[in-house]
Image (cartoon, rainbow, N blue to C red):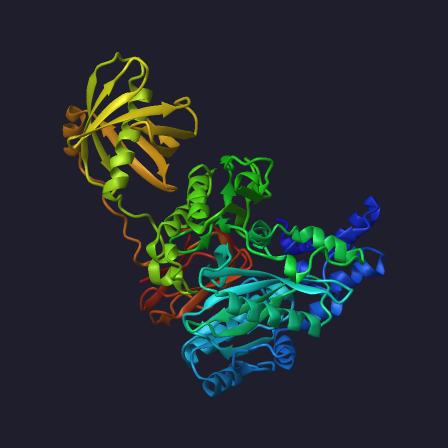
Length: 607
């Protein structure tokens, strides 16, 4: 298998490709090479322009220890912490106790959430030091770590800056990036509903002070942690184009990539600070190939892939879908799990959110597990809608991850009529305009008895619990997206997954729902069927995700305590520690270091 360092991370191959095609410049995107000084230097040696900041700025801001020192000198608010390199676990514990818990351990050369751990006590510092240093070495070739005070319950808000070689530096307002998992962003929006004009100006000016301090020339992002009193502290500067840059483009009208090209060509910025305003609201959802319950990556083949309807992939209609895959693409363990970034733009925040909900409902992704159910759920969460978010949002609102939620009364009232109309048109489409009775049973949902009366024009009058709804299907019954109009107004979207004549597997509000729809007589027979026994896996440690085994720290016959680390699985550049689920003796080791394992594959067995 080809790993990322042998493909998109192969600097020599990229330079040779640029030379052979006669390219004058290379834009590194937002992968690891975008902040790699050696890559920028290699391009320069070969007479190829690097579309990004100068090497010295990348180096200064890429080293989190040096960047904090520079930030303090530039008058930027900083988090209390240790500004040197942490040599070993014992020194890490000493520093953590001097700073005071909780602390953040993070890679000096890192970014994108790689090599970051939060520790609340000495034991977690030791474990975090080990895992973070290994992750940092694997991702960045640099295992140096730093430690700083962890600001509890903060918002993560960043400022987009643009600077040129003529002394101009401007800020393009802020992005709210607080909704995260594993220190990686999930939903971003611009502007932030929390930031006042006065705080925005102060943050923007400090971001520009930092950019000027390192003679920054290109697009960059200064990230801050903001507490409940609007105090803000420098976190890091990303010396590259950010994944979430489109939402800033939407609200400012500035083409950030075009400005990067201008700056790389030695031209001045097209804008001054007075030109920058806020026009509307934009939201970005990162669609990941991962399990939204445990936030673990998913691999496989995209058997069906249809992106939401967009107009030439621009924000003209308020929807933008940036992706690099098509139906038939393979999602592997060697790359970041992000499938696409989905952006919506509208005059107000609520309108942008509603547009995003509709876009997610229209997004068809089959063959892998993905996080659209979680994204769709967050968009309707009351705390999110009120703007009451922080970096702990996911763990506080969904402490066990998100595996779906029971239907509300209003959701049930729109889903059941649409689903029964779909079932009748598929299972009994040759039947005449008569009345039919069905029993609808869903996993974890209340059973419903429904009567359907079909008209000659194909509309259905569906009666459920005394309420009758007129359902008008839109489009053919075999399309993956099924749209229905209820009572001539409300629109309901369902995604068809599987249908065997009795059982429907669908997505509603992005969540998979399995329903059985039968006649009352058939239901009586099904109720009499015995249930299958549940398989006991309590003595097994299963891999929580596909990946490769990088370490097994026990042998057969060893006694271990519950919570002891027994193995490490590497997936999508992240080290995942597997711990003993119970105390006991190791009966059998089913995997070896270097093995590539599937999700739920046996790793260890206990007596």
